[in-house]
Amino acid sequence: MMDEADLRLKVVEVLAEEFELDPAEMGPEATLYEDLGLDSLDAVDMVVVLEKTFGLKLTDEEALRSIRTMEDLFQFLLALQVKQ
Amino acid sequence: MSAIRVVITGRGAVSPFGLGLSPLLAGVWSGKSAIRYMDKWAGVEGLNCLIAAPVPEFDYKGLLPRAVRRTMGAMAVYATLAAKEAVADAGLSEAQVTSEKTGVVIGSTTGSASAFEEFYSKYLPTKKLAEIKSGEFFKMMGHSCSANVSLALGITGEQWSPVSACTSSSQSIGLGYLLIKAGRQQVVLCGGADEAHASVTGVFDLLRAASNLNDDPENSCRPFDKNRTGVVCGGGSGVLILENMDSALARGVKIYGEIVGFGCVNDSTHIANPDKQSMVRAMRNAMTEGGLVAADIDYVNAHATGTDLGDVAEACAIASAVDSTTPVSSFKGHIGHTLGAAGSLEMIILLEMLQKQEIIPTRNLLNIDPRCSDAQLQRELSCANLDTVLKNNFALGGVNTSIAIRRVD
Image (cartoon, rainbow over all chains, first blue to last red):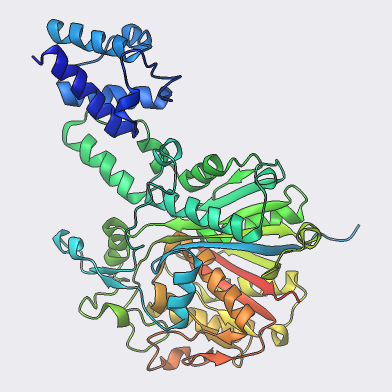
């Protein structure tokens, strides 16, 4: 299981690469849709990338839909790591 | 009210010679061939043709934003860059491009072949969709080029996408012409795109129609030559701006030519073999629609791909529909057979011939096949009085097209 600091860094790294984003703009408070400009197609690809990176299954659609910020995403993945 | 006339006011290209019109025209006018050996294809078991005319690799990330690029396979990237160049060449404003009066008609043989490979290489081994990204379908769908061009340029008029293999872009030009003549659109971005891929060349290879002159790529494609070796596939995109003539005149822009007739006929004799009589009908229909007789035709740009059946049928058809004195040539020796892009990329070269009043000869035509000798085949670059010309393209599946173009002074 990855520790929290490494997970945060890895999430920023893989999403920055996938969506051609500036890591400096991906702080915990940044919103995925408004601030980072992602959309519904990107949300699908985000799941693909995160599943591949962390070896997790992101199947809780309701929880995924509730993710608004980077911090929400970090917390979602940290909790999922513990569960899976 | 007089009939609507349709003219061409812009040209854009991504070709086997590279990105933009300039390398295409420079390559063709210097008599070069863009056909080369494909190293990676040597690993495809059973593939005999290891040569092609692909678009040279270039970094397009900085040329298109990610939001539009994510749903594009290579062919849609080519089409979008060609479309942007054509729009700039025509001097169309953003307001004109995004007006409902402007549409897009861009076809291809299929969706992106490399996207199909990417998708099925993940899906087939496991029958799982887990690693498939959201953009893949949009790269594979039949109207991928027109859809992506529409999104990238903000097109809000009509979107069409003829998917008819080697006539995809000639049908696109023909359809754009009809849409403008019908008064439905004022401007239409017309063309086609395709990408060189082993699976596409493999189709011609299976039909025993592809060249296997792998050790001499530049001299491999020899339309009308008795020592022809077969088709060499290529990739790229050509996009033309077709425009209502009154609109073009009001804007005071350069007019490259007027489309005066479009012949498009089907043959139902064989799914793969060409039919001379259908070729004749296509040319005659284009001429009739343009009010033209054989004596009006100054040149015929042949589809001729370097196959035995196709070259001979077309040479005889041209001699029959036009005559045996009108100059004829094919550009396949220069840029290979760019399939869905062939009609529009070759049309761009043809329009340049009208500008320069010069005829580009068939490259690699050293020994004319006696069965093709009824056509006046050109082997040297020459000056000529080119006013009215025909552009032929034919496709597997029985589609035969011919477009009549007239120079506008």
